[in-house]
Length: 131
Image (tube, rainbow, N blue to C red; front, side, top):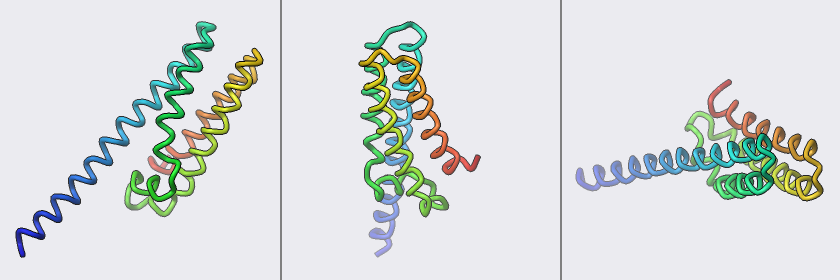
C-alpha cells in the first residue's frame, strides 16, 4: 500500500515537472517568435516577421483549450484560466491581423497588431505573475 502511494505521488510530481518544462519551452518559443517579429520590423524583413508569427502561432496553440490552459497556471490562479484562454484568442486574432496588414504593406497597422500581441501576453502575465 505504501509503495502504491509513493508511486502515485511520484507520478503526480513528474506530471507537474513535465508541465513546468513544457511551459518554459513554450514561453521560450513564444519569446523567440516575438523577437523575430521585432527584428523583422527593425530590419525591414517581412519574411522574418512571418517566421516570427508562425512561431507565435505554434507556441500559442498550447493555450487553445481551456482545461489545458488551467493546468499551466499556478494552483492559486487556476480559477482565472479564462483570462489566459482569452489572451490566447487575442494573440491569434492580432497575429492574423498583423499578417493581413503586412501583405498589404500597411506596416504601421502591422506594427500596431504586434503591440496588440504584446498587450495580450501582458494581460496573462499580469495574472500569472501577480503584477
